[in-house]
Length: 76
Image (cartoon, rainbow, N blue to C red; front, top):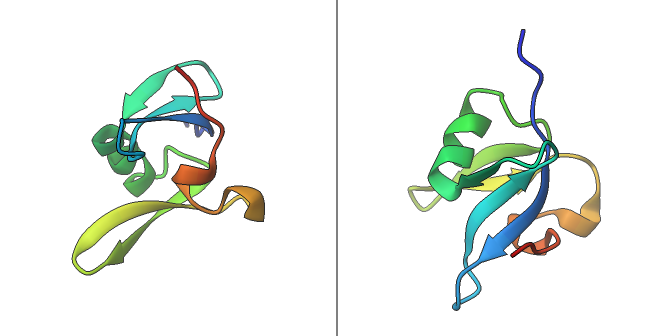
């Protein structure tokens, strides 16, 4: 069984919207890929939520400091 990845940091566009995620192993994925990974259980610290017909990622690690992807540390 494959080990789940953990999101460590995010990249945002000029508008402040999260576009990419850096995993604990250094790999970087775009939002759509990370969303699919979370839906299939490949990400350990986020889950997929749906609101107003749109899917988004929400932190599940129990660390309230990073409850949303926008709150994770940034990377370049």
